[in-house]
Picture 1 (cartoon, rainbow, N blue to C red):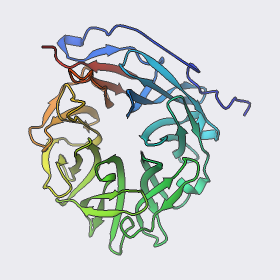
Picture 2: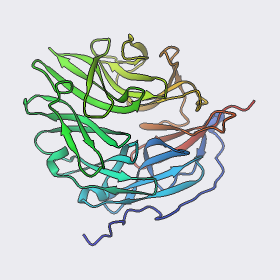
Picture 3: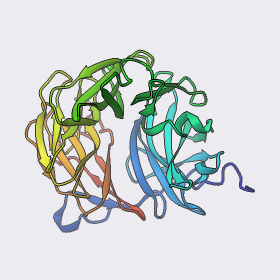
Picture 4: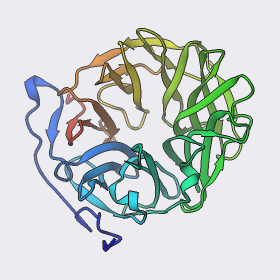
Length: 379
């Protein structure tokens, strides 16, 4: 293609900005910050030692190009070099990551006759992410349903999604790798795959006290039921039936002590649901004609968020909302965002040991994101 492998490196080695925050709009607690790059789309925040890994894309010759940065404060940014190899990697957006002994990243582009998702996998560290091309039918082809999210724990990277397994029934699947280069798909594990009369799906993954925690659902006789799966190593999985019916689990968030799971009811006017533990009854929250859970973020005793214990990004009727709740999923509050946007992501910045850290917010539409910060209240 005549393009250098590092053609999509954004600002190559180091890109630093030291800018002051704009005044919050209309007395909002959110102050706007400059983006790490012009017209960047920020699609994921992932905690790393001392700050955040920020994933997304920048404008490129084929529409978008992959990009990543690190920051400790939202003001100063360091570009992470990206090295694409396969054709779709040059136009991918980086959408999900996990941090273990190394960083595992999932990218997504769209192409082909039907503009289907074209997934790419990347790995490395906070200085460089390298794409590892895979055989087309590892993630795609006639048996592909979806690859949704990434996580990492120790030396194992995990991707989750759905696959048409050997039983010829669609079902939940995981892909595991010890090095981000060599991946093995597990679609026939009885804990994951669809038994006779059901159809399972895995849509979100995180890590926490249980190890890997995957959330999704099963469908039996036309009725959806929420599910979770846990694994210490990514190889052996335990299925957990969550309480509730006519509902699905979509995202989970953990701190070192606990996890909460979020999902929704299904029907004419869905309600968001929150499970404070995998054996608790769900607590109902925000509702809308259309609803989807995008992200869950939790405080802990060392990194207290200025907004509250548990935050969730929820798309309601096509618009991003920020929901606040307690660890036990009670006292829901719809937090006003500084601007209306189709999507949003949040990330926690560590405090200084005296006061809690700040929260970064990216509000995103088709063309670009806007970046915001909320600091802990001063005494």
